[in-house]
Image (cartoon, rainbow, N blue to C red; front, side, top):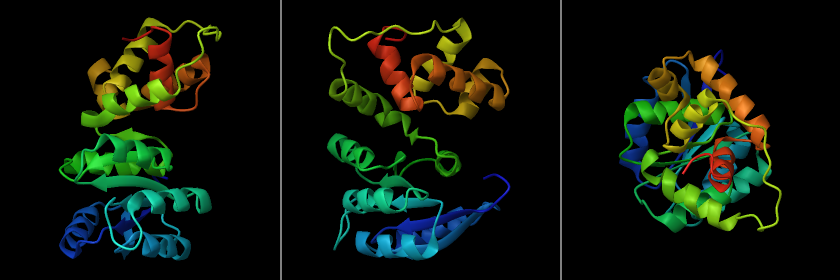
Length: 219
């Protein structure tokens, strides 16, 4: 994805916010804002027409809300990844958006760097949650997916470095932040995460953290 421009669709019912966000995103040479939508129904039509890599989706909009639009886009256009971008730090909205298929959840006060990083991560198919809601979301997913008491929780032992990477992942740190903290190359962090996923039998960062908490690797 890094060798190509990332196609972005902005979905929000506020004209000034869409204009400001478009101006901000176009400062990045590998971002291309291919379209805008003012509600969920229009977002679905635009996704079908424009085939964006990333959809930045508000939640509370007329005609069709962001959660419903996210669910339909995720089902019909799985190649388009949805990031919820909203004003509301609402636990239920966050869970509903992620259950609907969103790959990320950000508040509109997020820093520019975090927004750009989230778009890059989504284009690679990686989850990205703003640190302020990461713990809430993980605790809820852990509660919903708590295994039966007799379930076999055996796993291949993680190395000390892999545990460090997992702990930082649980805190909401991105690959770049983990690399800086542990003085590693970002590619090395990705390799560690791949091995962690394999050892724990999971598919992504969120599942890895939930599984690690279930079996006591991290608190």
